[in-house]
Amino acid sequence: MRRPALLAPCLCLLPLAAWADTLTLRTAPGSVTLYADRGVVSRQATVQLPEGRHELILPGLPRGLAADTIRVSLEGAALGATEFRTDAVPPAPDPEDPGLQAAEARIVAAEAALAAHEDSIRAARIEARGAAARADFLASQGTEGGLGADPEALRTLAQLVGEERAAAERAALAAEAQVRRIERARPDLEKELKEARAALAALMPPPEESAQLSLSLLSEAAGEVTLSLSYQVQANWQPVYDVFLEDQTLTLARGALVSQWSGESWEGVDLTLSTFRLNDRTAPNEVFPIPVTIGDPPPPGPRPLQRQAGAALDAAPMESLAAKPIMEETASASFEGPGVTYRVPAPVDLASGVEAVRVALDRLEFEAERIARAAPRFDETAFLVAAFTNDTREPLLASGSAALYREGAMIGQTWFEQVPAGAEAELAFGPIEALRLSYRVLDEMEGDRGLINRSNEKTEAVRMDVENLGAEDWQVQVRAAVPYAVQEDLEVSWQAEPMPTEENLEDRRGVLQWDLAVPAGTTRSIALDTRLEWPEGKVLR
Image (cartoon, rainbow, N blue to C red):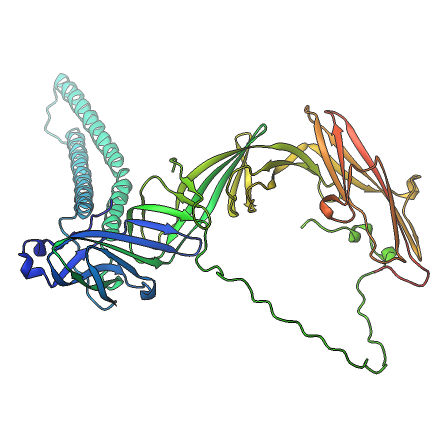
């Protein structure tokens, strides 16, 4: 709940001439703009001032506030000198503040509920002890003498004692059960009292954590003066996403994790999130001249020993030639000014130094292409990939926390790379267990073409299989890599059956892709032969 800016009550009761010099004006954070690296807090207040010079005292500011980030503007008066002090004792919290009254009332109610709970336990235990005492008394009657020898009288007494004792024991048992039921409510009552006290503490920060700002101003005529105050604090936000893939639709539920360490509590502030960074460079790099000179060559001498870059191909498997795989109201986006801003529709409460608060931004939907992608050299199954285009006007920011859901079930968490407006992107949604992969280097002992090594030649034959064990037909992208040469004397050749759909995929030399239709219950195979040749006396590095 936001506390309105107001003058100290005692000042409001004085005539204008008496408080024309110094006034205390209480303010509270009203709006906050969060950037990726800091936050800007704004406070605003309005006060009636007589003509003349005045000094305004603004208590309750964060003690760790950097004075050079403070900005003050006035409407209705001229601003003079400002002074920021961290050694001033702030005034006590306003006892008439509705927020404080509600927090104190919550503590009183929680303490009363806990006291009533203790009384209920004591009453139930008294009832249990009384019932147990009656049962013990009735049990003792059967052992005392002097009851007479009349059999009929004895039977009547025994029956009466038995019935009364059974009733007393049942009452004792019920009372003990009531004690146990009442005691189960204790943790909830203690938790409520703890939270009520924490809520009050959040509204009453320790005095040593506060500072104050003094303003000198000149009012040329009596009237209303509006003060606007802003300052920078330690705070940030980061995107967090839930990504849903349903059939051909990819839904991005965007949220933000908001944190602040300002030393003050934000209650019901209007929150705006900006993608701009205040500490980014504001100027381009300077370009300097590059002088060059020529001179005599160095004298001849022994050539330095070259460090061996790698083992020869005939001493290493073919794998060494391939790279190893390395809140529900939504915010409105604004594209005015640098970056993109999102205004959170609901007021936000956030105390300093507590865990991050998550706020909802919006939900975006994209048409997605479902792709089964396979890398048989490295994986045992194909993986589902969703390809989409960011057809919004804004970039999709990078996030270290993106939860992935496939057909309604959560399948993992991943890093979300930034996607510029208009760019294409892909997200992987886990393995497709029905698409099994195998990668086999053929052996000449089995009658295949085999693996041949000579001093200046290496030939390798492999077979890659994609087996569809499911009931769904799949179009599978199979990817593999062959070596490529950067020297004329090293010759690399390869052939495949079938031939790949694409070569040098995405401008990566030697990366091949096959687009294979793999119907349910079938297996598709790819044969890939690679041959390397180099001059005699040379070694492959």
